[in-house]
Length: 251
Ligand code: SF4
Image (cartoon, rainbow, N blue to C red; front, side, top):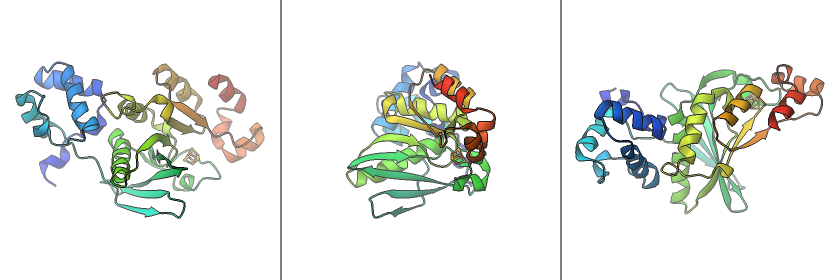
């Protein structure tokens, strides 16, 4: 492994964190973070030397400060209905899946937020693995960048994102919120909040915390039952956060 492998990943940083980093290291004004975001996320440029409106001295330092290479998928499969499934394998060997879903010509990217899951829903294959670890923000963003560029090579544009792959997104709150900020930043990936959906089993405190961030993405709550007795059998999380509390929180 050479030194470059140990560099922090650009794709872990929200624009505000990038601005703070550049200010502390180079006394760079905050608009530099917007410029770099624009190059990377809007123009697809990965080489800091090509970011021509960024000050030359900063450009020269950027490449040694941060890695601009997202993680790519390892393999993919196409199913008969036009859905593509992608396997991502990370440096520590943990694997997750992403899916490019075709709904009557509209494409959605379904991403994973954790390797495995701790919540133990009885009907879920991921539950059998248990929680291996949370994904980093860059591992979440990499799924979207890698699947999007696969799609664009086929002339497809994915117009929405769902967090419905492996894991409970609200159980990996901090990193998922950073990913949402990158996704919705106009200099970042520029998705409308209405085009992003988090699927949750109903982690009540995290639903409130998400609301407090000001991010107004869609929530898809898996109820799976209308009584606490049945829901607790299917989804053990219901013991802590029963249906009435969940519904009150969603109001
Ligand atoms: S929260 Fe989602 S990923 Fe986790 S066990 Fe339940 S259904 Fe599976």
